[in-house]
Image (tube, rainbow, N blue to C red):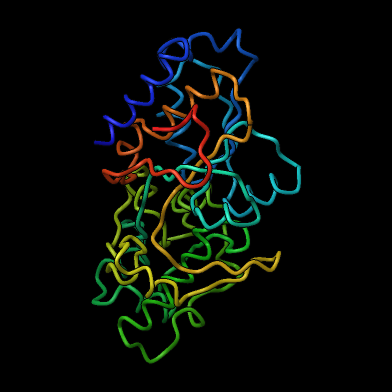
Length: 299
């Protein structure tokens, strides 16, 4: 169903003057490169998956999604396409007229099986016990800059409720010195600075690290648990409060009259099979559009 929807939009593009592949092929004469500002967790899939699937000069720039949204909202960045790891950020600080949900994910606890701390996680009856007692060098990302950071806090809070712990895990485990940029978090495994981290499943799969699957009550993957996830919240520096919810990636084209190369690249970005190859989940009803979608992108 996912592929069928992708092809139907390409048919629309074809009717407008050429197939998606043909549009991508003329990008050099259609006004230069396509600039895609994206969540850090998408970086590898875009650089090594999407880039090889499009015939255009693709420029990818990656940040934590909260930071990316802020940079665009304040005018510091002006990309053609913005793709974020939390669609809530399209309700502020960004407020596009429309966007498309195109992939989902789940939180897992990744660990370095060759490290003492990682082995402690692997051997634990409850994955969080070694983190509480300080047996593990734990890493996380900055909740002020990207959704993975605040989703890690959500997972710890939800875990306390799910397991009925004696301590509040959200208060007990996080320390400021644990914070790394999203794009460097798993790389810190290689230096021994980090032995375990809550990450997206796609990140662990991509890097080939062992991981503990978290229960659905914690991993932010299950739409039927939306209300329960929403009990966990975090307030961003600008004052906006985000709530826990099922992980969903969203993307929008920022130009009201986009170039053909932008249209075709966006189409391949949100429908391409490369997403599942890099560990993302694409539900059958995705991409799912929100808002006042221009006819150019209507399914």
